[in-house]
Length: 227
View 1: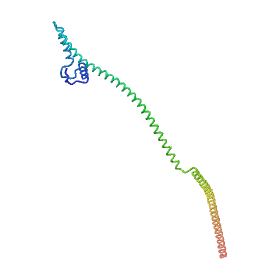
View 2 (view 1 turned 90 degrees about the vertical axis):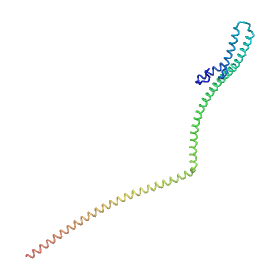
View 3 (view 1 turned 60 degrees about the horizontal axis):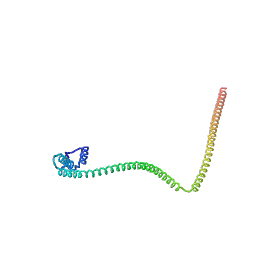
View 4 (view 1 turned 90 degrees about the horizontal axis):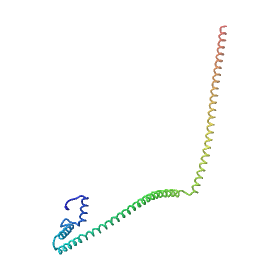
């Protein structure tokens, strides 16, 4: 058996299995199974010999049985170890399944906790907003003071409205008076212009009458001169 060579994972498994079956744990010395085979072969060959070799057969039989016992005990130990490993493997699988189940439960709990955390954040935000509003309200003056201020402001507004109304009325009156004044000025200007026209017409007429009178007087003087 080439035990000193490098093997792959599958070949390693085969070698380990072979060593467990043959009780070969080292590459040095003769393998136990080969030694047992030699004992058995020697015993069989001694039986097949002709002659009275009972003592040799018995000696070889005891040697074979002793070797068989020596070979069987480690096998029983190995079987016990294998059984223990199988039980441990089954226990490990059960433990693994339990861990997976616990993981699934934990994941569900984590999701629930995440939802609760989000709800808690929202609730905390609402509480902070309410607290800010409460502080803002607490910083404001009492209702009675506020009501008094409102009443005073309403009075001031009413006074300003009354003043505004009076000012509007006064402005409207001033507009009417100014319009009447403009109308009177226009009428007066028209009257003055008419009087000026009449005066100019009278002056013109008087001037013409005076000119005619002068002309007539001049004509009489000339006539008298001729005569």
